[in-house]
Image (cartoon, rainbow, N blue to C red; front, side):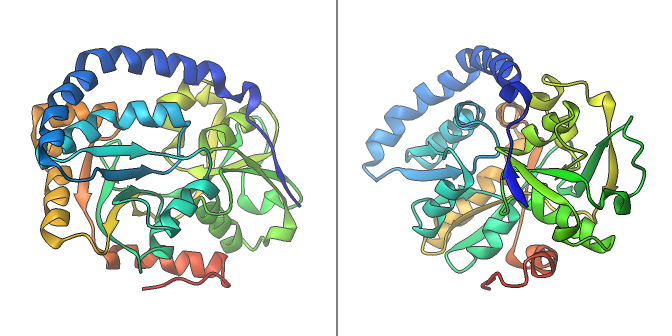
Length: 307
């Protein structure tokens, strides 16, 4: 059975606190960058480049986190880069399918399903690493010490069935332990942070999410992370991708890639990365996502995955 649940208190206090902090930083860094970029973009006389950001976080926070990055790209490219996000994964995916985004940041499942429309150019580095693992979490006081013990239990996943880190990889971990979807109750929170917050508040027996979710500020501000632990983790795979439309001129795509991967070598770039809760970008190519394709095919054998 699949149901939708919300994280306790909907993580409102965490989001509100985070927004206050980020808005303060915005006044000193982000707006200054944006103001400098506007005349350059206007002079270029070209249509804006639309940068789609998937709803990993709440929409307002997403815009705040990536505003300095968009302003930096605007200034360096001499062309406006406009952030667009969506209220949920379904709405965002529709934008991908319709190729509404020139630059797109999404999860690995999104990329491999859209590789006929977009080409990957970069991937996230967070907490100093460019790889991530899927994980299953439990409360430390649950008495659950092994993945097979989740048979018959309620597991909350974040976002939906297209969430790579919060559904597909944890589901793969369950399959590897001999558990099929009918062996446990599946519920969804509206986003990955809420899946862990729901577990903390006793709304499920386990949570499926990325291994680094527990370290995100939005989670740490909403719960006592010391009360939960990793029950199991998958192999490590390359982090969240950034891609551009396949019909984008190669020179422009190469320039965007260089700007992203060069951020951590610049003082202002490191500030932009910190604002986006990242430590860098790494260059990426299509073959880097073959391990993801293998896992997706095991979890979702009926899904068509183009090359």
